[in-house]
Image (cartoon, rainbow, N blue to C red; front, top):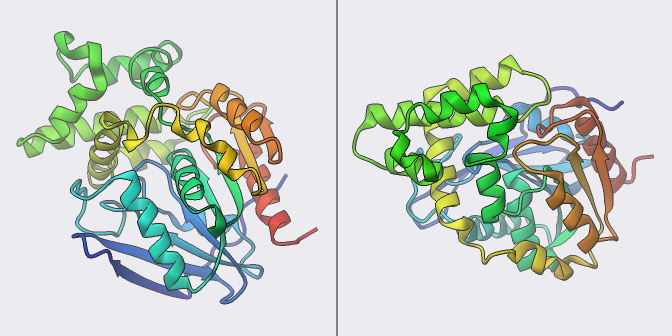
Length: 315
C-alpha cells in the first residue's frame, strides 16, 4: 500500500494576474525541468493543501499547484464575479504557458476531475496523461443526489443538521435556498450558511469519520469560499451543457490515464465513474473497495500514487 511522499516546500511561488479582477496563487514543487504536471483541487472552492504536493515523487516531477479563483490564497476571497468553469480552464492554460511546457499530466479529484475533463476536452493536445479521482460530471441528477435526495438517506443525522437552517417551505430546492443566503446581504447569515453547507460535505466524503476534515470544513474563512463558490457553480450547472463531459469524452481517446473511484463514494456515485470508464476504455480504471470519496483514504491514495509513479516511468 503506497503512502504520501515526505513533506516538501515549493521551490517557487507567485501570483498570476488574470486581468479579470482575480489574482491566482500558484506554487511549484519537485525538480525544475522534470516531468510537468498540474494539480486541480476540489470544491470548487476547496483550495490546495501541503499534502497535495506529496502525491508526486519530487525527484521525478515538476508540479504546478494553484488555488482556483476566489479560494485558498488567491484573491479576492470568495469572489464570484468572472468565476466560471471556463475562466478556470483559461487560467490553467495561462499557468501552462508560465511554466514553459508544451503539455503536462493533469491530476484532478472530485470537482478537480470535472475541471480536468473540461480542460482536456478543450486542449487535448496539452495533456500528456490524466489522473482522475472521485469522478463528478456536474449533472442535475448528481447534484440532486447529494443536495436533495440520496445522500440524505445514508447520513440522516448530517442531513437533519443541513436542512435545519432552511425553512421547510424552501427545502424542495436546497441548492437554491443555500445560494440565496450565501449571496445575500447578511454577513452573519452568510457565515452560518457556509459552515452548515461545508460541514455537510466534509462529514460525508469519507467512509469513516475524519476529525481533520470536520475541523477544516467548520472553519468560517474556509467555509465561506467553499460554500459560496460551490453554490455559485452548481446553480449554473458549472456552465456545462447537460451531459457534456461524458458526451465529449471521445475527444480524449488518444490520452492515456487512470480513473480511481471509491466503491462507497457518497457525493459522487460510482455510476458516473463507470460511465466514464466505458467511454474511455484506454484508461486504467480502479474501483476501490472499502473507500468513500476522499483522496486521503488508504486504498484511493495508494492507487493515485501508483499512477503518478507509473506515468513518471517509475517501476
